[in-house]
Length: 377
Image (cartoon, rainbow, N blue to C red):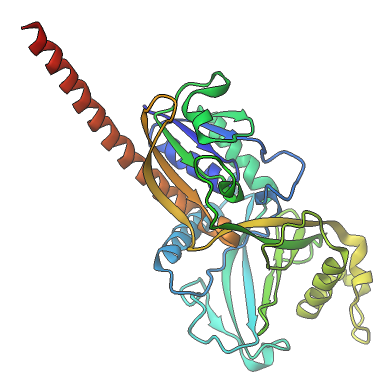
């Protein structure tokens, strides 16, 4: 059993830690934010809308990660397990102002169909319907952390400034056999990594309590503006959103929240309570305001070049010791929908890196013993 240190406790860190545990290793998580903490912009996972909708594009590896994750979440949503209480199967309708027929990467989803013209909502020119899952992040993250702890995992709450702190056994922790970095946006600043290709995509949301909403909708306009409505098992619904590249502003902008709700009501007028619906009256944000739980925002940890899932060897400056390191970050807004897929990949890379390092260490030890034996002769 190898001792593995992992930096990060968001959805990527927790799923990766669990996959590494499943391979028989002892894992310690180092993080300054945990799922039960008060929400903050720097820790995006608790804010996420978290449904599973594959994004358009030609990245085959990313699609593989997303498919692996969907298969797992779909299975977990069955029955009455702890996981199923956090994950809900829904019908989602997605509308597009531009014609994306055959380009959505959604054709394989359960119950997929193309929307008829009379089903479209302005300004959409086409649309699709399919079944997917939504995740109640406020319940799912603590569940994953509890599962990690119940399987012997350890958590050290601390702010890691440089990976050498962990590799040298700071804070009285054991020196690890390998390190895994799931630092999200923190990978830009973490000493020993400092990946300047990492950048934020600010997203703003409004959480409303609307237990009568059980289906999901999304709209993509020509200008890139997107609107999404994601219900949860709890009866809450996440409404978004925005994609503001390199915007570090850490607080919700009220005017942005108002605009999000206006777009959402055009997309789904029945967001307002049944007792306030009037066909002769256009639904207004004022009708929805009593049901607002909170306004929120988070910084999605994106990366130029896409997700980084790879392994390497780092040398600890203080002692020259070489240690395997695995990176798993840069998921942008696709953290939940690619989480288990990249966690599986990271765990496989770690297994291989540890195996190779063990062989190398054995050869060095054998060589050292041989030299001693020859000298004594």
